[in-house]
Amino acid sequence: MTILPIAEPTTVDNCFAAVEQACLARGLAVARLPSLHEDFMGVSVTGKQMSWELDVLCECDDLTRLPNIKLRMPDRLLAHVGYWGSVCVSDNQGLSLDPERREEIVAFTVLAAFDLLEKWSADDAANSIEFYNELEGYWLGLPDSVRARSTVEVNGRDRLIRAFIKTEKGNTKWYFTEREGKALLSFDTKGLDAQRGLYIDLPDIIAPPLTPNRLGHEFLDAVRERMSPGQTELWEQLVGPSKNGPKRLALLLSVPRAAGGRSLVGVSFTAKNGAVDTKAPITPLTVRRFTPTYMRERGGASLYLLDKHIVVLGCGAVGAVVADALAATGIGRLTLVDGDVYSEDNVFRHIIDPGLVDMHKVFGLKFELERRYPGAKAQAVPDWAQEWLKTAKFADVDGIVFAFGLPSLERSFARAIRKMADKRLPMVFTWLEPLDLGGHSVVLFTEGQGCLDCLYRDDEGAASLATRTAFLEPNQAVSKNLTGCSSVFVPYGALQARRTGLMAAEHLLRSMADAGPSYGYWVGDGTVAREQGLRTTPWWEEAKHVTQDEATQRVFGRPCKHCREAK
Image (tube, rainbow, N blue to C red):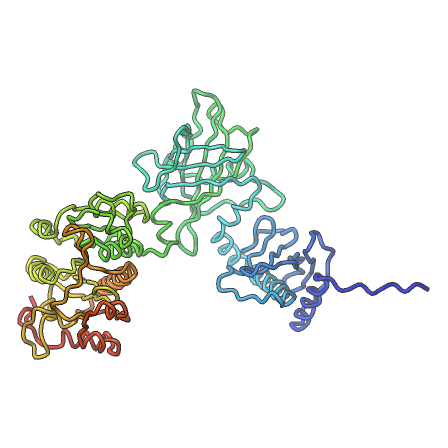
């Protein structure tokens, strides 16, 4: 008698054993199914709603996401289940997976998918709401779906738009723009013929096809049945006769999402003799939106700040970082004031492209901000702040940043603007200490107690030429001279400038909640400063152990003859 060797359990066998144990622990009936794909395990788990037939990938070494899992032949539209049956059990954020516990990961994924399917199948109304919240993800999986990019604002306002088709190496891409005006982000449509397009907003969407069906003309028929008279008129303009024969057209559809905002999907089709050509295919379009509103929402920029206007006086290494940080957080309008020209000495400390050397800093900064942050508008004022102040108006200004690093000028400006402004505005004064000593940010207001002169007093309250917040003892030479007077500069570090600029930007944003005056700072280790033989003030050492609330009280806690009485 021949004794056959006992086969070693495969990875799939081990994974099923783990799934079986996990299901039995919860009292769930489980059965193994024949595998449909290599490295996938077929399994059936029975719950209160039905028996769910699932395929899960067992041979998976990806440590950034859970294994792929699919529902076999979905018989209806289910939340978090794609066209091809893929079940989205996790957004994969913050996962911590141990590759040596593969079987447990597979078991966890199966039960997570089971729980999700049971949850949404138990409540038809909730399932429908959740499914249409994720409509764009389902649309992406439709057969023959084509990618598209759009600068058309999804705002519910029905209108004709322009469409462009680009075919390259067998791949087709669509681009959509407004018919009028210039988009904030432009596409390279040079050499492409403009096609007809239409954007309309519907109160609710027509159900997309279920596997294995494809998007067909019945979808367009259902859309047309729901159109308002105004939308129908636009539709007739879209499909109307063309001098050049049949035309490939595009329709973008948006619908409100219960979770907020609007979903956007699209289709392309052919029109012939003023009507839809039913013999030509319907192609689903998955649209990526390149509009300020959409990108701001997903990029973390505040829509609330879009209408805010901040003036930045001084656009050097610190001021440029402040402006960049404010634009990144959502500030929609910035006025940039600086008469200086961008030079090769600035390159490693500034955010402007080196190719813009010899241009005024404010023009280079305006270019960078409007290029990086859709919806941001910057006004460049290539003049010194003293000239700007002569004609300055503050009615539409929401805050002012001073990044001069020039004490005499700052004090003069602070006094002048307190007299000129007819409303309460936050003013941020920020400056950087030489080398690695640290940086400062002071928030004051154009009304009320607390002014920049509060800083220029000694411990007895008498006026002083040196600020009580200084880290560097006065009357020490810190500038460097490389090739003569034209190359004299103060040796600030790029990291120190950025740290100070970010601190000042955060300080300003907090002040827009109308808090009182405050003093913020960071203290460097001073290693380089000591190597250069620079002497520091007692405050530099003491500041390391004092909270910023305590420091604020020390600076603004006693009366000042300049701001004792509120305006």
